Image 1 (cartoon, rainbow, N blue to C red):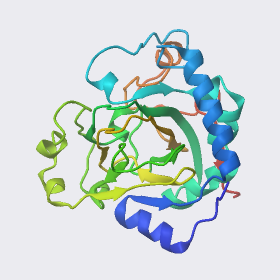
Image 2: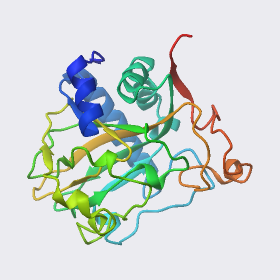
Image 3: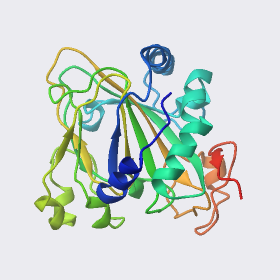
Image 4: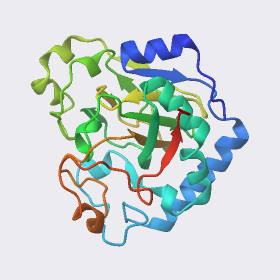
Length: 268
């Protein structure tokens, strides 16, 4: 795992709200993580969320379900996935990019664009979650080459500085987000093809999307979202298990090590 960042990458992330990191994983690491991801996805069947018996979300036939095969919290059922997404060295990278002192896992997710899958409309991540933070951050790891033909990521540089916590869902209209943020429609998007093992990091308020998969092969990606230490509950349940959700009130600090473990904290 290549966890070395340059000062230019950190500056690029702060300016644009995203940054590419080529060669994050070696070929052997890609093979190991990809096998673990696919094994976990197969084990889950149509169930969307792992490790929480109370969450009964299932893959259906709606437009959203045809954007990608989405399976969440694989780290709770697979030790290999856990070793990667809870890596302290990855946590150190995340803290350096987000300029925070500690970081917790929010949730991971496998995002697999099946052959001829629908495009992913422009959206923000952080408004979906149970906390609001301008320093939330995600990693997106290509398990196979991600190309403009099979649905690689696109970002709107600087959009994290325009965003609030209003959001558009991932639906049939690619540009619904711009009804909320007209200024974002004036930004030229950046296409980010990646080789297997490359990754990107993006701010939870950076607008992003992806095209359709126009090929006969799956586009396989593993992602994970992270929450800065000290973040507080905003009232949204999102991925929280029902038993934990019922104990929370808006403003409570989200520091449950069972569901959102801390993976890195800078020495004081």
